[in-house]
Image 1 (cartoon, rainbow, N blue to C red):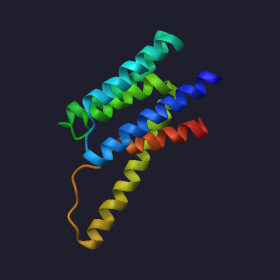
Image 2: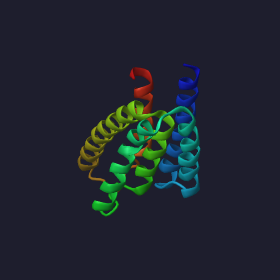
Image 3: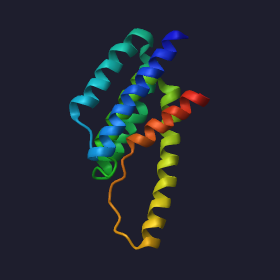
Image 4: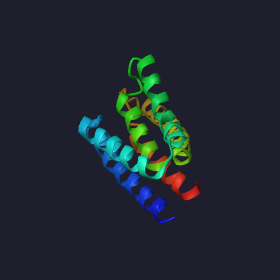
Length: 144
């Protein structure tokens, strides 16, 4: 039980740092996301079996494939961050976080498009996803 709390706190800390980076710079530094992944892999190897590790990284791998297919409309940083999240938080929390993050991102995008259309403002092309993924992690911690 204590290890679960520590892993949640560590994954939330890592996601907060990456979210701030994504909001401020519209990208994340490679070394930050790789540190998140490598540290998550080490921890995951200590507390999970191989099949759970595999299930934990599937959502991130899926986002990486979608990023490749879409010409990086979904950024590789989003997929790599999701891989790291899976390693830190485990597969159940990651699936909930990704699903909730996608729903929140979609809802805010619809609102954003409507408001910019009403105000006749120019829209930006990219909306950072990692903050929504972090919010999804919070949802998974509370309800998962």
